[in-house]
Image 1 (tube, helix red, strand yellow):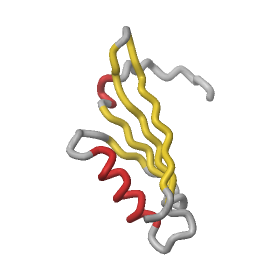
Image 2 (tube, one colour):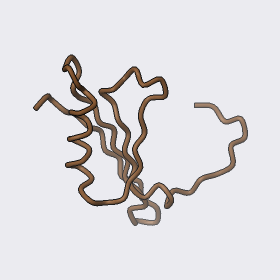
Image 3 (cartoon, rainbow, N blue to C red):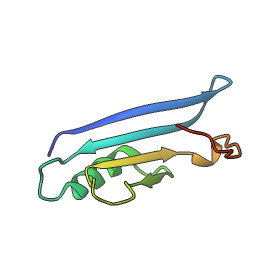
Length: 83
């Protein structure tokens, strides 16, 4: 299996886990990086509900963002905020 790396961030509110975000990177230089990432994500999430996001132009198949319990995040209105 190709080398897989990931970043994981647990978001807490009032001392309780609200959601978990993971960014996977791997399969760079491999013939089918999408399959490699799919397998890693499948192993990571198991049978837990989650959302997956890929890069909008689909030219980075070696990256995947996975969010558990996205509906538990406290969203706010967008008012021309900047990164």
